[in-house]
Length: 86
Image 1 (cartoon, rainbow, N blue to C red):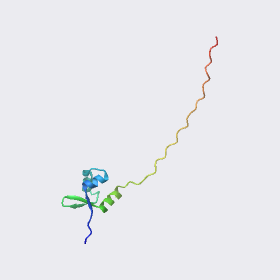
Image 2: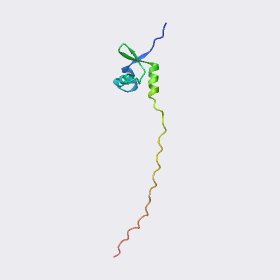
Image 3: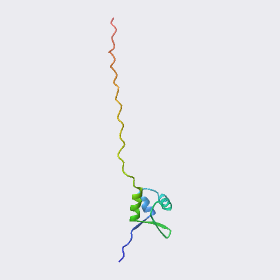
Image 4: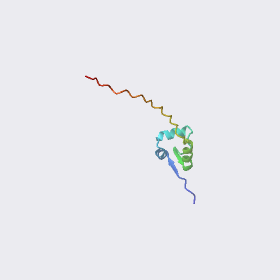
C-alpha cells in the first residue's frame, strides 16, 4: 500500500495564510513559493507550506528602547496675593 500525499490548493493555502488567492498565484509565478503544477492547478505539499512559512518568517526583534522622559521643570510658587487694606 502506498502512502497518500496530502496537498492543499491555492484557495485553502490563501485562507490559512490570511492572504488573497491571487497573491499566492503571483508568488508562485515569480518563483518565490515552492509549488506543484498538476494539470493547470497549483498544489502545495506539507513540505512546500513549511518552506513558505520558513522563507517568510520574520525574526523576533526586541522592543525599541523607550527614550527617557525629560525632567519636569518645577517653577517656584508665586507669593499669595496681598489683600488691599482699607
